[in-house]
Amino acid sequence: MKLFLLLLATGCVLFAQPQPQIVITGPNSAHPGDTITLNLSLMNMAGSNITAAQWTMPVGVTLSGQQPALTNQSVFCGAGIAYCAIAGAVPAPVNAAFPAGVVFNGLALADSTIQTFNFQVPANAPNGSQINVAVSSPFAVDVGGASVNITVVPASIAVIDTLDLNGDGVVNLTDAQIALTRWSQFGGQPSDFLTLIRLMLRLKK
Image 1 (tube, rainbow, N blue to C red):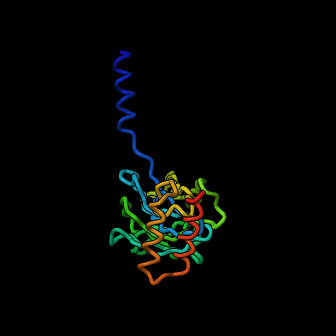
Image 2 (image 1 turned 180 degrees about the horizontal axis):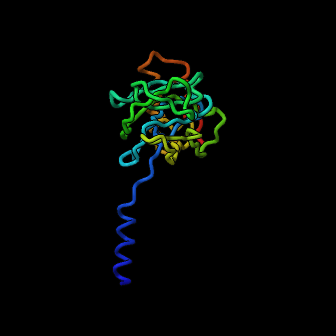
Image 3 (image 1 turned 60 degrees about the horizontal axis):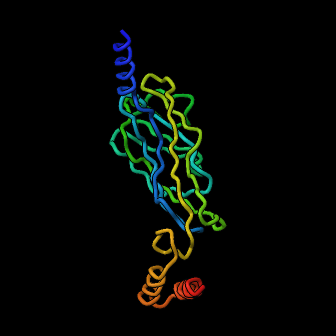
């Protein structure tokens, strides 16, 4: 009997429905002041019957693209991208929890990349620090109009030294070679020359 209960419990764990998620992905590292592109995707949608979701975008980001993955999906963004939502584009009764103009067609959403947006790493971000970029206030409803729990997975970005040009975690001659190549190939830009000088002074120590 105990063995049967153990196997039953194990089976429940193995076949538990994954939690629907709003996932932010992007580069693993960036320099202070860099503007990076991040992707927002819906994951683990299968079996959740979610027909619409909304979230609040991080402060200061700029929307760079919207890619509804299926013809029955639309992306709606509020003024200043304060919120975004996904729903079917065919008119249907509007759920009061969503902004005016967001409509549903009763179809479930699939895993897909929904948006791309730009985020600027703070110029004063300390080297070696970690920045998490996430949306907030996630909300979702299923095809029957009931709320469905949906979680947020942030992008985690390591802030690296401005002189670490190849992002390998160290400042060395390889970075100096990259700076020299940039300076020689792009018309001798003053910024590239300044970077080269800074690298030489750093490596001389």
